[in-house]
Length: 206
Image 1: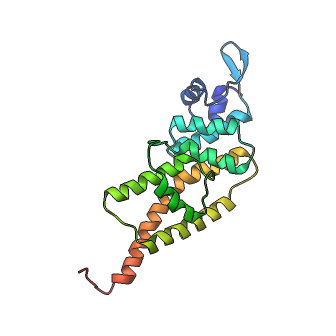
Image 2: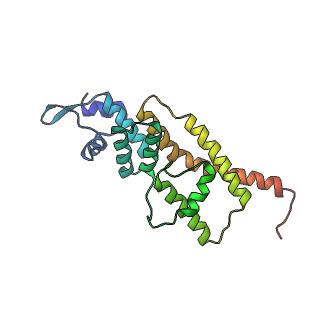
Image 3: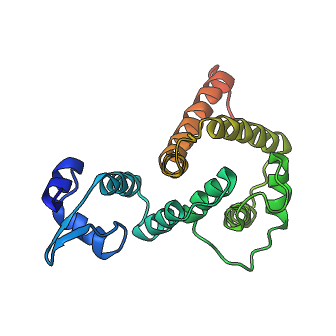
């Protein structure tokens, strides 16, 4: 199909397709003339992935890393999912002390080498933020977080499709980009429900 037909099929404007081609996010079509190329199902599928990622708020740089993972997927599903997470997880200061983060995620079953270091850095940065604010997480709350997060993760990983690397990466990346805001919103609703159940009788803080 011509680029105009590719645009009509996918709903992606021709200028956007040309931009993806220039950025090498989309592979070149088969040349039929110096100024014409033919595109196929591979391009339709790739545009679907790109469009979904961009719509989810994934940056072009992160899209590029996700596509690199798709083009050269690791041998195991575990490494593939790790690569997908790494593609959308910004690295922070390598000098961060990860000891507290490692102690916390050990409660999730983590052992050295089980996840990308960028994820540990993100946990460490969050813990540093709590410490700087003078906020101390009660032990029972910490335990509830770990139990709840592990149950969510188990359910999510059980749902990872195994039909293709594209399907698996899309599930993980879009699940991260789109579901994490939902988790935050649900947490706040649950807090208000719990608050109403505890303080709804007119109890005051002292």
